Image 1 (tube, rainbow, N blue to C red):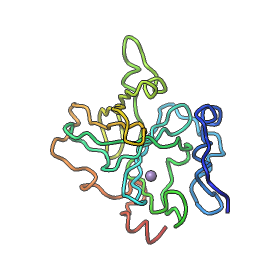
Image 2: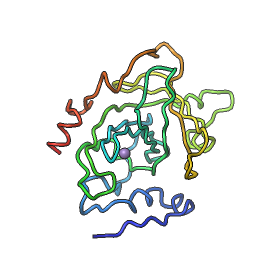
Image 3: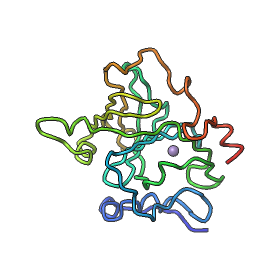
Image 4: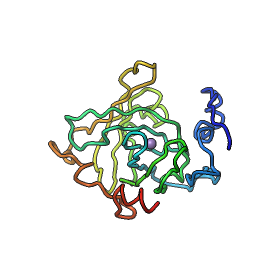
Length: 210
Ligand code: MN
């Protein structure tokens, strides 16, 4: 079995956008996509939120930026209530075909546990629509992303804001529903709508069926 010691430097990651993703995984053991196919063309960028019951249950928010899925792990998941500020920890870029991944990452593998497609759809970069337009790549660099999500569960404007570092020096971001007509104060969408938008299954069904 291959070793997975990650020695990826940021300049390597720039040259090989998915090298950190691939270095963490043994594709002989996991059914996750390798991302070898060029990304399918899209006029409108896509996003996915995957519910992932690994060592801790969390939700992975992934936004298509320049042909890869920029990713954040959100322990409590997204909220439609603008009063909620949800911690979002950046993780490695994922390949575009991860948009469709639902299944079980085998025991012993990186991220072992069931993954369910909790929501998916398209988004609009709200900062592109300004007198000085800011691209998604630049927004990510600046630590200030504003998007309108058009998903099956999540609809409306959301901000992702870099807000400092944790004790081990990793960037912390916050995912916040921006105030708009779509906001639902007092709601708890991850509890209210737990099922996969692709198969209708809950996380325990994915765990037992694969
Ligand atoms: Mn995850």
